Image (cartoon, rainbow, N blue to C red; front, side, top):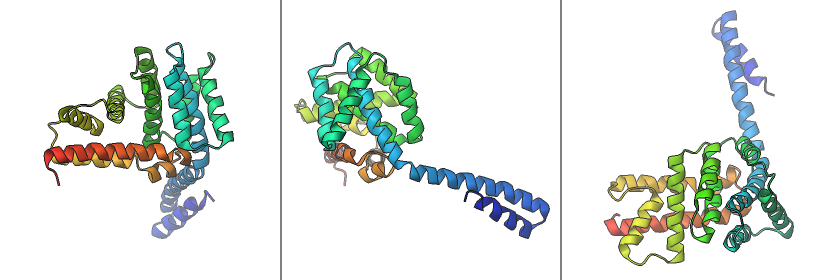
Length: 260
């Protein structure tokens, strides 16, 4: 019933004026119909978004891991860790492995995969960020993102509409998180510096700026919101762990500053 807006527009326009009013109402109604149609497509497309997210996550991960010439044991372990976190059924695990292998192939079309992902997910910033985080984490599995990997990751980010500056901040955030989880920080100052990096703010930021950064990150990684927008439910643990890391960083900064 994508004509209902036009009908209402004509009736309202005519009642408010004359034939000219009806024509104006028709134009308004057409705009309403387009908005309603877009909303229905968005709501009804969640399953397609989830399938595309799943497929693209593992195929692009395979491509990123292979881009430096070989897939290291650490990178394979990272891919397997994502699968474990998703608690995949045997069938879905086989699909994930098949997609990972497809991404490693020399004829893998990265542009086509990214464009399909962006088109299906409608460029939703929250999903794009989560997708990039997973790819960067896979690249960081062997300790560092090398130059070749960074170039392809930056290309992926920009293809999905993320700026070079935003990509750099995201990589720094994840590198800092990995150091803390690996227990490589040794003193309070370094831990505090990592916490600021995770929150994406400078140490000179005001308390209000720290709070805003924290709330923004928590909003971006809220599992329920991500799932409602198309993140596969099997990936909810990835989002939950990210919120725990953000909360830990915020508590570190709060304690250091004596914030309430």
